[in-house]
Length: 572
Image (cartoon, rainbow, N blue to C red; front, side, top):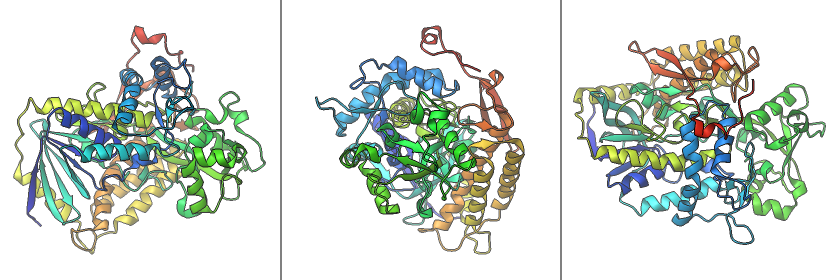
């Protein structure tokens, strides 16, 4: 089926309208570039809103001893020494200015009594560092960025799904997309693209991620010749809702623990005193998540397979002022008043530390003209992300990606596009409109079940092998997927298109987990329970000429002498 398509021209195409995409759009626009932002969702509806706790930045308004050096060291250590040191340095140094900039844009942060920005404690941070707006910081960030984008010369296209990036002579040339509002195909002609599509949490059944997080950008980049890195590193947030089943996995922000909440097992024991006597509930997320997992596995969980999170001792006024979102979330969805009752929580898939392999300074990939920023990109977080570093990440590297792309497009002409390649991609998408094909939701259900059962908090070789076999089988079945209906507003077609990226992400996660024969950061192997110094390296995946997924490893870049004294030596 060959359909007509409409051409849309700009200097830079940005895919994704979360915090990273919108910050990149602002930066690129300030460079004088013509920018179009395309999202499969709606403006203001992005997974960024689920980052509720705050933005990590060493502005030292609450703890005067804090500094970028301490923030840098915390990021490297909690990243299990897999982080790119240059990205960690830039984040720590530039996050304070990004917070002040956000404030100048109109964000309204919580304040201390003397008018400074309030900062709260979070797991893994040495000092109280998270600048916050109650427990709705991500929402405030999106609201503020949306206001900026709407008042600038930035074109925005909603409910548009990009199906393929076009590469000509080694550099980006454009993209094919479908506009689900009209059912028409689009050809984006642009000199550069910034991928800001977020993570792939939806490859699991139980996740805090919103529906958009299906690994779209990972698939687009991988198929265009970019590399993926550290994909085995999937963060399980310690506290997701458990009951009722309809909200299972919904995030219970770390702010609850940051503001004094404690974890109790079904026996009423504060079990983190056994697992982490010093940091307790505010240890790194991988530590707390595994502690909760072990308590439940050892029979100390609730009837719903959870543990309790209790903040009622802090008082109703404090809770409603500091955690209004959590108060309403539990009251609305579970009928629980957290000012009087305990919450039932268990680990939930929350974040991908891995992603598209990018240059630390510019967020550029190995394909000229393709950039990536935010959760979809890798390097900063290493083996485990610190809470609050995600919002700092999208601001710091969203800006850097936009600036780098803006500089790049001034020096190049629009690359040529092969019309036959465009028509072939349109035919591929149109072929899914086959009512006799396999329902894509059946494959999605099998994929998420396999990932949840076999690639969870604790992993081992045999179970990972079962997951890989299922992913490869689903890849074969993907060729037979079909849906009913037409192009316009076809959710089944969207599911079929998303499934390609989900399968690419899942295969990279599973194969990386099989390769890494150690336990490090968020990656824990029961058959290799210790950290191995020979595995202080990154695993990088790319698409081979025969379309199979190939892998290589690279040693983690060593810290320069000027930074070595800031970080305590790694302990094995």
